[in-house]
Image (tube, rainbow, N blue to C red; front, side, top):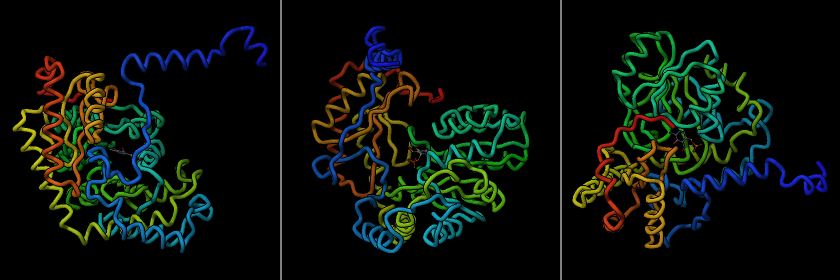
Length: 398
Ligand SMILES: Cc1ncc(COP(=O)(O)O)c(C=O)c1O
């Protein structure tokens, strides 16, 4: 339509629709916006990211990225099946196979595309796929795109999974190792046993476990397909699917995300390899992270904060309502603490939370100061709803 026509008929329907939706999002506290983060966030104490070991600012890794870029160029310049796949990718894939025991591997630029590619390429409308209620949005999107029939079991509930598996043998079960919003750990051993008994594949999104949980927790011995990401505990970027040679051959040949996308840059592949090696040779980082988690939980309990049973670096503090969590996160920011404000629909309604992520670089004094600040703010806000949500049941899906 011409500009003249538009003016005559009023606003374009798409402009009107978007503006109405923005108004709704604002009213429900869901108008998510970007904020420019500090380059090296010294001014704030950052409890919001997933760089659990603090590798993103490690100079030795910056050097690895630089050397990779000098050697291979700053980008891969093509998709993997054209000419974007080279020795740096192959070496990283081989190292990942060696660490996890899987036969083969393929790399992606993000965990989101790895998960959605995997789901939509492997499955079709003839399949019934069994998934934990809280699996990541990328898994859900991929499953929806696949057209498969999705059956969800209660979060981390092996008996609920068992009922679905018994009713639907010879299929696939999908879960995460560490759940991104709750920080709790999946019952992998039980799910693996059930899958073996009923001839199901177990697929695990290991985004938040890889690099921080022992490698025996999720590997080729107990899962059929494992997705690892490099943007969390490795502090860099990218992801990999690990599986049997046949599965990877099939995905390489047919996954549209893989075939029609520029490959992960070789410098980033080299960086991820360096980060794996760094993490393996600096075990004190994991020890420090574990100590920081224990300290956080101890102080939060002293302050009677509504924390969950999570024993990982992801430590939610339940706040309840979307508006309240944003207000508290904003006040924390003004006091110099960056934390994630997680609202519905990312988490179930009424379970908005501060998502505190701990890392190996936090000082004990930072942790104590954060918890005291949160406690003060929460107690200042109307706390009538907090008691209701302190015994949460995370059963609603994203
Ligand atoms: C459980 C889980 N899987 C997959 C992803 C996607 O990984 P990436 O950030 O590499 O796209 C995320 C990221 O938030 C995640 O939390």
